Length: 303
Image 1 (tube, one colour):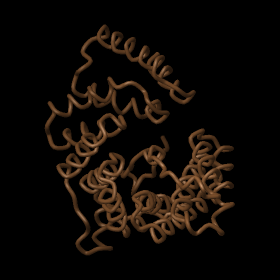
Image 2 (image 1 turned 180 degrees about the vertical axis):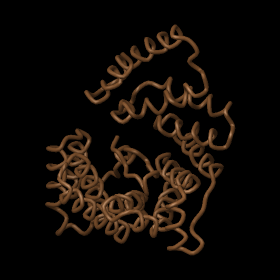
Image 3 (image 1 turned 90 degrees about the vertical axis):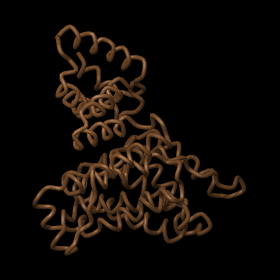
Image 4 (image 1 turned 60 degrees about the horizontal axis):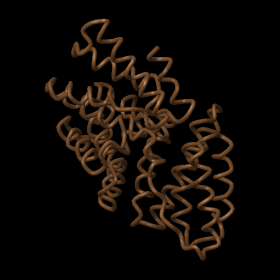
């Protein structure tokens, strides 16, 4: 999975879920089909070199293949976003963010009924906002939600999109004072949401695609906690932390730190013995479930 950007310091959306979206099957008679299929394989490798090769393959067909322009453009948005994640140079990162937005907009314009274009358009606005600042992103809150809602309408069986809407709701409900002042200055009456609405979206995501991503169950736990329902929050926090690693994102240190903090706040871990037992079990899960070197970060954390 790939990390998805933050919105005004608190809106972390759909971390990595975009890479799960299943690509459509292009006609086997199409000259672009083989290169698109190869680009998808390269994208899955997830390295700087593979992203560069993926981008080159897609760009080879960008100017001269209008028939599949939408298919090319959402993939171009996806690879620009992911390439941006692994490049340290700030100027190049900003350019890739702008390219991501340009390609996503073209995908929507060319193929308005493909949910992937709308999904990436929502992500792209936030990505550009990381460089343009809080005011830019807040001024586009309605646009972001509109794209995610359209994606959900076009594909109601994709948990990732409902997760994005849930994060939009959660972040607005949890907005700090300064961001609210900026939103009020921009909108007069700014968009609002509640933790209840966020929870509904996270539960919907889990319903349509059970177990698709551990972060979704964590957000269910956090939503219940914000609503004051500690029992249900505790249940979902337990569910989150007992799940085995499926992706590199699951293996990140901060992800499980957040889980542990939430768990320990409820005094679930009461003795050092219980903690040692849980760590032993989790370490075994990691050994059996981690597929990449990045997943192995969990071993360090649980040692």
